[in-house]
Amino acid sequence: MLLTSCKPKVEIRGIYATALTKILSNHFQIVRMSKVISERFNKKTIHDFGEVSIRDKADKHGIVVLGTVEGAEEVVKILKEILPDVVVREKSLKGWLGYGCFNVEFPYLSKKLLDKIRNKVTPTIPNHHKLRIFASSFVDEAEKKLCSSPEMEKELEEMLKMLINFEVGEEFKIDHVKPDGWILNLKGEITNVKPTGTLEVKRKFRGKGFYDGLKIPKDEGDYCITKIKEGSWIVKHTYYSSENNLKGEFYNINTPVEFYPGKARYIDLEVDVVKRPGEEPEIIDLEILEKVSEEGFITEKLTEAAKEIAEKLVETLPETKKYEHLAEQIKPKFQLLGNSDC
Image 1 (cartoon, rainbow, N blue to C red):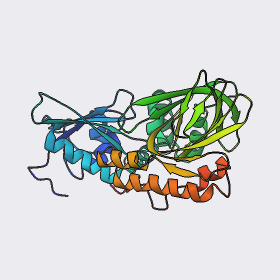
Image 2 (spheres, helix red, strand yellow; image 1 turned 120 degrees about the horizontal axis):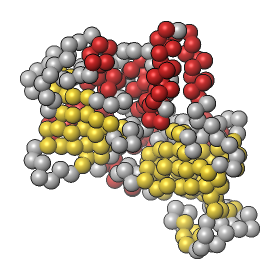
Image 3 (cartoon, one colour; image 1 turned 180 degrees about the horizontal axis):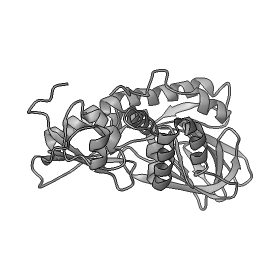
């Protein structure tokens, strides 16, 4: 693609720099490249200041895009077109006339695609960007070995999987991230680690209250068994009374789950499916999904994927409640892995 004078200059730093340079260099002029990036792309760096700056978010689960309104919006538009489950939050910059700032989160599928894109530039281990967040030095060592011995890819992948290990009795946290960035931290204890990769986590409740989704009272001594698996679009919460009587089932629909040491993370897609004892499953909060889509937090494609998951769940639950089946089989029918030919 020919660069034109109206295209902004973009400066990129951080753990996503290689993949984003590969994507954005097709559309914009990349300036002030680091020595490593310059060598990887075999290009001399241009020392002009960029109209758009890209840096890692503090938690490294995405990036901050800051620059002229037009330039920042163009960068975000390209990322939304390419990355399948990207979440975009626009930040207010009152007093910064003419400037725009976006917080761009890369959930499970986006990180996977960025891995593939990076691998077109330089040898990249599976889950590179995810591992960069908490085990950067291990990634460096593994990729040095991969460069000299490409046949070791599978062996290195298995070694790196050992960095995330779960044991019965351990505390487990779930980062339930809302599209607008607010995080609800759920904490419990691992009660089962299945060979399939599914974790069962028990959470206990104190005091009285109300389960909004299920529309039933919460009582002293209630507890919940959460079933969660990496890569699943669904997290199942089953609620019981202190006497072990089933109170209801709540199926959270989310971007595919990511596992990290001691915790899981996903973006809640707002729409859910609930099932009360003796009743048919029901889709709830569809209007909230529509609202966050209209507000631009998630793409139309991801919105449709969430609806499809909910509809498939309602159809499937009368036949099976087995979480492993739901986690493996219920996925969007259309391709969400994006385009790695960048």
